[in-house]
Image (cartoon, rainbow over all chains, first blue to last red; front, top):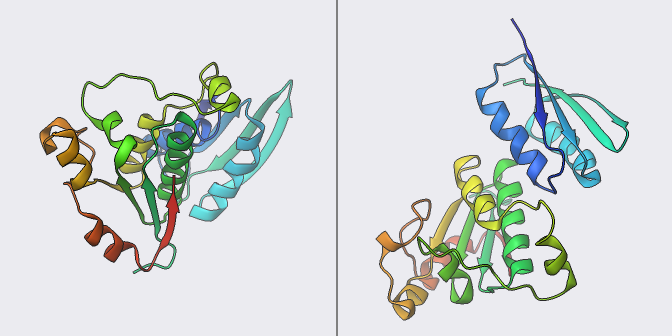
Length: 76
Length: 130
């Protein structure tokens, strides 16, 4: 059954949140949803770019109180 | 060979340049691009095992980075190998000058290579120099 994982990249600067997402993806199953928390504005635009480039499913980005929540689904 | 191959030549020992080189290598590698890194001159000593010295900053940005939670350049280079299959080559000339053997270098580095071979391998890729 697909799970939802939270990747807490808050406080880290580019490309820290992206690298933390990739580490988490290694242990995730296809179909799992991952949500990255980031306080780095650049990562909020870079991570969706990376998700689309490598062929995962980008779901959404929301911002709340200076924290970006980027959600995706592992596709492969 | 892939036209999107990224070849990163790192010769500086400054924090800003090492950081930018590590960012290019790591993000390129995890984005599916072939990445080759050549470490020479003042960059190589940081990859000798046990060297914990901090790279000096060139300007205000480097000084500021040192106070923030910026991923360390050595961590990013290691992740470029572990997460993205980048290949990092120590320069054989710099090793000779430093007097270090392969076993003294970080384990995620490839065997030493010379500039002639690196340039040959890099001829069909983008070359980024830091």
